Length: 275
Ligand SMILES: N[C@@H](CCC(=O)N[C@@H](CS)C(=O)NCC(=O)O)C(=O)O
Picture 1 (tube, rainbow, N blue to C red):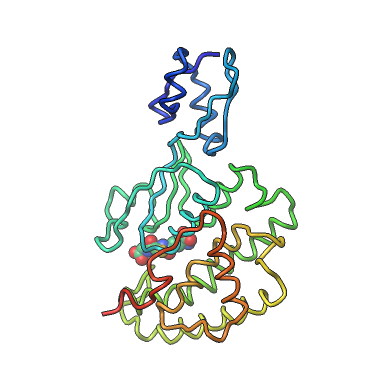
Picture 2: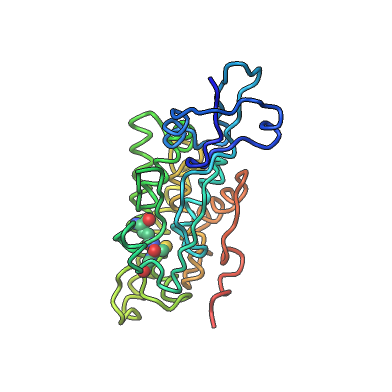
């Protein structure tokens, strides 16, 4: 089978491989396969006539709409790093209200980041995106093929989207960004105390779970940890101290030690945004 450098799918072979390869012609199926399944750094295809597989590690065809300081975007960026995927990042500047401009709303009517576009598939939620990416990478270890493990992971994805989102997330948005994020009303100061209260309650729940488990689900790092980590670790940006939650503190440090972990602004200096 011959293969062509398919720029439409933004797949290309590395220069070195091309240099050693006279083969260049068409393979439409490459696009079909790659868009859905070959988004993985380690993915390779065997090509007739070649002794070694052609590595598609430079494949770039998924677009992740993200904002640097958005913890929900950061979740997905973390997972992309852990899975060693090559995804094109598109910056959506929330400070310029880019998420509410017609062009963006046409793709994501929720007016939020992150969003992922992979061919004709558009996903508009960090949990959905992480489930998708982790499955593309073969489910194990970040997701699972076992129903009980999937449900255990989902429990924490739901926790991240409810307790965490409307607690520590909201407090950080109000205290450090001064904005009532995600549809909160303008008199957001009234909501700050409620968000802090909910934030502490979520930390109690999390601390209890982590007193007896090293990781949130399945006894290994999964997307459950990736979903919960950002806003919990950034809670001090919302004036919510982590000092009383020893197991959470231990888990945060352990998470930061994962291979290919990268930080977000505010992790080391929670006051960096404050006037
Ligand atoms: N459930 C969504 C929530 C995403 C979300 O809260 N995004 C925030 C940034 S972290 C956003 O885009 N807010 C836009 C706004 O408040 O206008 C997810 O997990 O992806």
